[in-house]
Length: 462
Image (cartoon, rainbow, N blue to C red; front, side, top):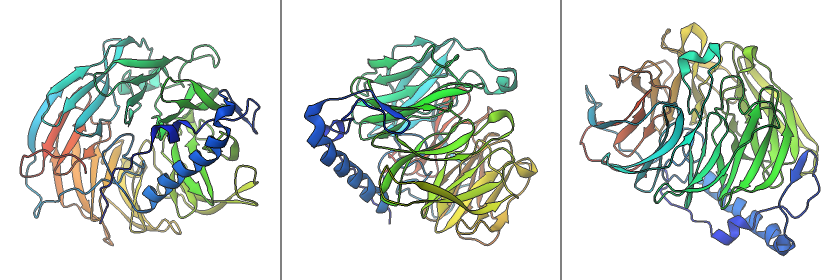
């Protein structure tokens, strides 16, 4: 059974995690230094990562604070599954909130939605009954769409990240903001104009911030150049940064490979791993796609990193080092490659040693494969759409396509099965859904909606 424990990390411990030197380490540069943190850093950061490691190991789930949930793996918490899937869903409430593909996030008893109204970006907060609690101050986010991305709108496309006392948002132009969860007031803001020629890659910023404690990790820049950086969640100041690749349309994940915690992300032309403590580059795998569209969130499974791209199939790499820690020499080794299914803008989930995903082949089809060796177990029906988001429990997977079709499929079958199908909107649904205790939260092009599977009482994801 999935646990429902909320781990609180002390404020001093989180913010003890910072640089001790102004000198670059490998290709990373520290921009924050304080000798008084020297002893604290060496112990506090290790304790923080130990807490994170334990939480990841015991499958602790609480809230849905960021992109694809608490651990960015698309796994839901302890949801209540109906004895029989109903013929129809019950619409509990619906609000026109603004455009964009940012997914809703949940912390405590609050829902946060990042949107665009006109040429301005802003954040909105609701309770579970759909009552608006506050609207943040908006800021100008003028953006010119690339001709190949007209159908996707002006964003925002990056999902917020909530920690106890701050919400991080990243706008279509890489405007990074820290907001108060209590009233939506602005705590700090960073803009990244000038260094990279443009403030976003070709099709707009679409990478969601990651939090380690109250440290924010994000990737900013334009086409051909950028930086991955860690920021202090209190004031937005830079702790470390790694300069090199421009951001892809993928989001970073935290993983432990060997004994080293790493930030793993797909950039515009590579898959990279950097040390979470310092930003030092540990390894890099060249990974280019047509149209430079690396969009899939990396999946970490049994010391392997699994990636996919536009017509690139799916590939698993094992990462090993000749010595533990940041200064070891890491070597990526390809374990398997399956050319028959390719993910594009859709990220997979893993349940009981099976990977479930949505392939661009056959004009969109679901698939299941063995992540140990890459062997395909089944593929679903064809022509399901351009995109699908997946949320998994121990026994079921919820699938939402961009055509507003919500499906329930069972886990562990040898063939494709569909248990239930619901149409949730007459508009496109690109944003990732949130499967709550007994309901599902859905953001379409303009509206935020909550549906119930049965008894229309609203409870959170815990």
